[in-house]
Image 1 (tube, rainbow, N blue to C red):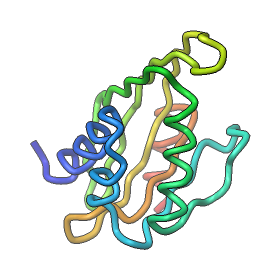
Image 2 (image 1 turned 120 degrees about the vertical axis):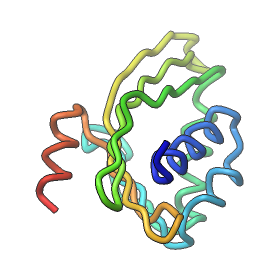
Image 3 (image 1 turned 30 degrees about the horizontal axis):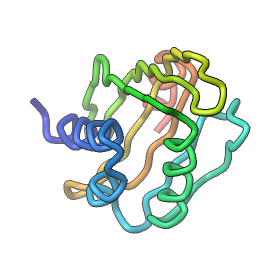
Image 4 (image 1 turned 180 degrees about the vertical axis):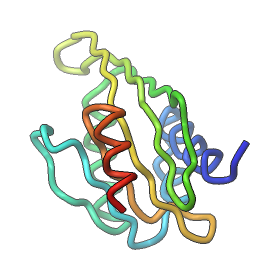
Length: 130
């Protein structure tokens, strides 16, 4: 397995355990997280404290949550991965299932940026544009 894919897999595994510190340990101190543009909280989160706040708020909206990394592809210093998410809302009890794409940028064994896209095709287009 390629090193970048393993790094991203470690981040997703940490999220699945609710281990925000373990996730952040794999990220550069100035890491930038860019959620889906359609998200009600769509803005850039930069640095460990902003990313921590965003992720903890997001995790706290679910009673259960599971993210599965599908079809990860490493291209140079970037990893493209489809994420299949399943969870149950804490307040509503509603079951959620979603699929979206993440494009991770890596440097020297650490994640420096992640952008989310609605589809794998949009993620691939973003990969090609850089």
